[in-house]
Amino acid sequence: MVLDTVGDEGLRAVAETCSNLRELRVFPLDATEDSEGSVSDIGLQAISEGCRKLESILYFCQRMTNAAVIAMSENCPDLLVFRLCIMGRHRPDRITGAPMDEGFGAIVMNCKKLTRLSVSGLLTDKAFAYIGRHGKLIKTLSVAFAGNSDMSLQHVFEGCTRLQKLEVRDSPFGDKGLLSGLNYFYNMRFFWMNSCRLTVKGCGDVAQQMPNLVVEVMKENEGEMDTVDKLYLYRSLAGPREDAPSFVNIL
Image (cartoon, rainbow, N blue to C red; front, top):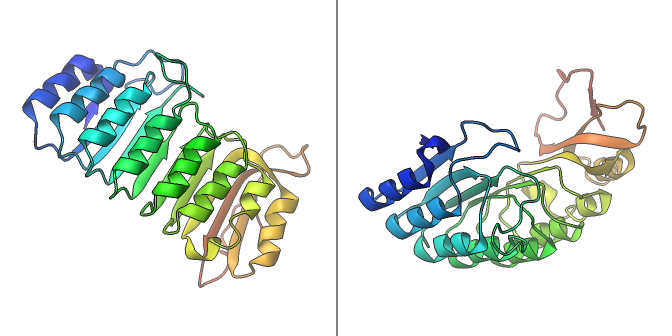
């Protein structure tokens, strides 16, 4: 584990001396969205070229390219965990300005053992189509500031048949995307949505159609009567919890 103050040069040194490295986590010294950050696609590509036995990476940065992510997918095919956190919202490829679809598509296509994936940056439904089509072993998926319609969730639910944990925040997904998972929720451990476009009615429809599922909703703005800020959906043999705080409504 290192802080991003190591910079791309520090990561290049790691790549040159740690050829047997299996796990790397690069955390930000300043986690705010508008921070400059000291590591980028350059450091990621260096790691992929020097540490080809890598199995797990968590990488916080502000700048990334599809080319660097594609290089990692080709150089590190044994990845089990790929968590790329581009901290600025909807950041495209820093060189081409294109969405990061092809980079994440390459990760799920070339890393056949992948079980955990975190996506960020400017992503369209195309990226999630890749994930659904090729991410057959993914058990944990985290999504932030990504996707452009409910089709993204539909691709994931229909394709990632081993999915256990799904976390989504600040993405344009609503009731239609939520309801596309009705046939899959019983096979999952939990589904969390935060700051999306859900309504009380949509969440209520899930609770009504899946009575053995616990559906918790949280609202921060009481003035918005039909909106839901947070949704927590999970399986429980014991039924709904009895210690829920007042801001949690169990449907």
